[in-house]
Image (cartoon, rainbow, N blue to C red; front, side, top):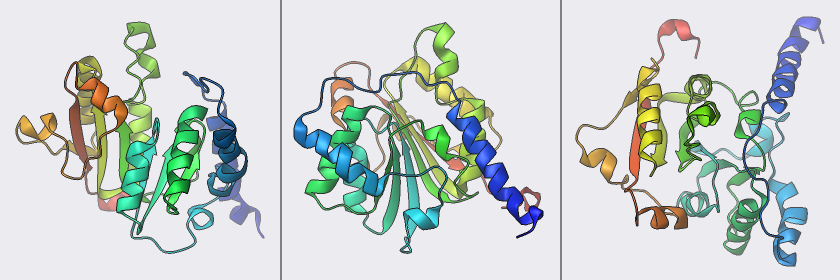
Length: 246
């Protein structure tokens, strides 16, 4: 193998190492897991865990119609139910909070869901391994709003991450963002609409005040409904120009 043919792998390795050094903010574990949940972490998770050094072929050897990606899936209700409803679609879910991962694993195991792969760490670590235009949907649902001004740099919706999401989404692919924190909603709208590769699909207030037809509510969302009503923002990845190389 020539040095030139080695270059993409070296670049990918360097990108993965750089991603691993990204600062992480948030909790990784809450209360101690029950033995059955801990067993799922120890024995089941390794069979469906994403290796950032791997490839999509490793993750989904069988041909699937689409690939959806969810950042910070919390307890996994949305991810598990979407996967059950769409067995012909592959799902990658990222969540560093161990208790949430265990909850998702329990749901997948009990319903024999086989089209989900899990990364129990920072989603940004996976951006380098995914090919351009490989995703059909990207979900950022009820992310930590980091309300203090000095913490806004920690928000997941930011110009750098949007560049990655734009690269990963296919033309016409969907970016869905939901939040009950209105300052975060305004933040997301500003940054996504400032990005040249995205357009907002809303045409009237009801388009963002009510969830999409295939929406699956979570326990967190049900709690949020008691306060500020969530906003459901749906964006579309614009068609690439001929010079974009996709």
